[in-house]
Structure formats: C-alpha cells, structure tokens
Image (cartoon, rainbow, N blue to C red; front, side, top):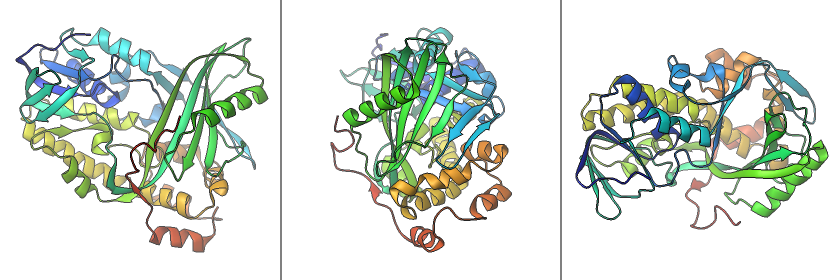
Length: 403
C-alpha cells in the first residue's frame, strides 16, 4: 500500500480503482505522463475480484490501444451458445480480462505516486477528497468512480451470478467459450451457465440468473456449479471464485438519480454515473469510451469535467432505451422459467446484430429485426409488460446476499 501524504496535491484525483477509475488513470497517463494523477482505492488491489469479457468489435476507436498493456485471453475462433431448441457457433472474436491482470498492468504502467490502495474516502468535494484518518488530497478535478448506488429512481430486476475458477485433473478439451448454456434447469429465473477455457487445464464456470430478487444463495449456486461440472465431465479443484449481484435497469428517472448522487463540481463516472449496458450489465466498452473522453478533455476545470460526463451519461441513457424496453419485456412478459426463449430466438439472428446489441450500438434495422417475426412471448403479455412498472432497485438492507 502506498500511503497518502497529508496535503498532497494532484491535477486529477480519481476515487475508485475499479474498471472505470483504473482505465481513466491509464488513459490520462498515456495522454500526458507529466500530469499528476492520484487513484484512490478502498481495497488492497485494483479491480476487485472480477472478470470482464467483450467482443473485439465492442471497442471504440482507440480502445484496443488503451487495453494493449493488459494481459488478456482471446478466442479468435468464436464461441458457442446452447438452448433447449438449438445450439449455435458464432465466429466473433471474444476476449476476457481478469482483475489480477488489470491490477498488475496498472501498477506497471502508472507512476508509483499514483496508486493509493487500502484507503477509504470519508468525504469528497470539488477541491479534493478527505480520507479516513483525516488525510487530504487536493485536486483541480475530482472523479468519483466508486460504483453503482442503489436508488429508487430506477426499476428493474437483478443479474445474480457465481463464478468458479477450476483447475481440471485432465485437459478439458473445451476450445472456445460457451457464452450461454441455457439447457440447464431454470430455477424460477432465466438461468444460464457461462464457461471460459483459460488454459488446457483451467476453466472459469459461472452460473448466472436474471431474477426478480437480489438474493444470492451461495450454497445453492455452488452445488449447481458442481453438478454442472460433473455432468460435463470436468473434475478438479477450485482455485478461485467470484460472485455478483448487478441491477438490470428496465426504466427510471436518470435526472432524479443524478440529483441524488451529484456533488457540486465532482465528476461522476462508471456505473456510479449509470454508464453501462442496462440489460447485460456489460461495462468494459463503456468504461473505455469514458476513459478516452476524460483523457481528451483532461485540462478542463473540475466543474466543466463534471458537466461533460453528466451530459455523456445522459447520451448513454438515451441510446440504451431500447435495451431497457427489452428488459421490461424479459421480466414482465414471460414466466421466469420461460424467459430463456427470448434469448433463444435472439441467438438465431445475424452475428453482426448480436455484436452490436452487446456493444449497445444496435441500428434501427437491428431493432426492427429483434422486434419482428414470431414473438417468443405472447403479444398481450408484452404489451402489459411495457405499460407496467418494475419494483424500484432499492432493496432492504441485507437482502442482497444470504450466503
């Protein structure tokens, strides 16, 4: 841990060393190595315990260069999906980045004085941040990227998952990702298993649920992963795991949320700013886009940077309305055990349409194609879902993880 120094000054102070904050720090370093940047993270490592995956075509211009320092696994031969009605192999290049590699690259690329881990922020204002213990970081521009804040300004459902990193006793012979295996029992939710072959004897197996509540039952999910691995013939020892409970946004009032989280003169970024895919919870392409935007405008005063990213968040909200509508139909128009049919139909569409969907860049013809044809849910149910409201995404404290 690099301790903060009382009275330290920086051009830009970034709060939160997750994906959004870390990429902003890296983009600033690459744009201007002389700029004094401070990256403050409450945990002992940057990026937490996560794995981020994306299609090669998801990245904006300049994105591949920004991600070049990170050790990534990529599968140029594409990926598979499985549903009760059909299976399909798609040839799109798929990539994945582990948080351990994220942390290692940032520590290698950033100036030694930049990273401050194990530091909790007590308060923040337009001129800097005060850490627990009273230490103060002064900055011309403060960027808060400390993660999504649950708010009743939004409504929707939840994406709940548990992932296990497994070292197999023998080569597993899986040569490409299985991005979605929905042949598994649905358990009162849209459930699928996601598998990444990380090495000849390593797999990452994740059990994922689109469900109405944020409850994560660790014991149940762990046993289901074990049964899935047994059924696939994968035997071995777990060497790591991760869990997550992510909001699936189906509607809400961004302006009200921005008023709730706004600190005058402080820039809000990442999931905290609602800059993410509302249906899939994908964040990496959005984090890359934001990091490049900040670096391009790095000399702005704090108040102007805050206004710039608030406007950027509004643009992202506007361009992702289609996916919030689909999320409302997913949760409201189909019985939980029948929700998989929506994705089963979706994965019969063109590979380009599927890639643009995950990157939140669907064209008008894409949207029409998704909505036309034989509907996977009854039309009256879909219309009722669109006219209804989902529960607010502000569950009682303590309900998000019963494990």
